[in-house]
Image (cartoon, rainbow, N blue to C red):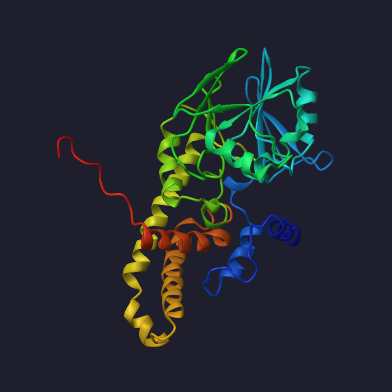
Length: 342
């Protein structure tokens, strides 16, 4: 299984062989333990092997489909079925799951963002369906001209948008570039379901390098924005189980600790001390060595707190530490809000 998942990650461009950040000496052994002894919070109902997907109703009329790695959502309204994302790993099994749940047709497909791993099977639905996305996602898909990701037929441009489809309200908000520009938060207020992809991974630490976020500060800020919504069920787009509000709270704590651990590493690792070892001639060697050691300090402190509490901690935390210390190096953190009248 580990070999299969690694091959899948390499095929998707999720790992760069030979380019992993420096790890503590016992990192590989600790990563192996993550696979063999996942914490309870990361475990879930097994995926039925005969189907390859698991379909569960997360709220009245609202269903989540997962293959164990990716998730999609569909809501059955009186006017038809609304689909949110269509990952290619689930493929046409998504349409089959819908057909097994209701005789109503799919009328609307909502794209949370442009990435092919989340909407690369959207072409399975008829050309007549209404496809909704942000202006940024629309522009990117138009430029890519990928038949698997048909361009939207409707674009939402406001920071907050409310659509009524049949008997359900869908709020499509774009408060910031949390994962990529134009990513949407999808909120079904009556069902108390919230979906935001590639930010929170219930029961697990984030995927490699903070989910490959294009804006690290946006990734950080997203957690507080999500907690500003009223919801019981959270769908993050990855892994098996749906999440809860508490999962988002825990993810926020992990990020807070990550920032603190990276800052501590920057204080503890002496740049000039590293320079005395490497010399100044090869500047990239000097800077890279210092950054690797900062990330190692961060990783040590993070694993002392989080290993055994969230899935994949030993696998992904070293990369998170490297990305966070680099973010602090080049961007810093926002200052406190300005005082009124100040």
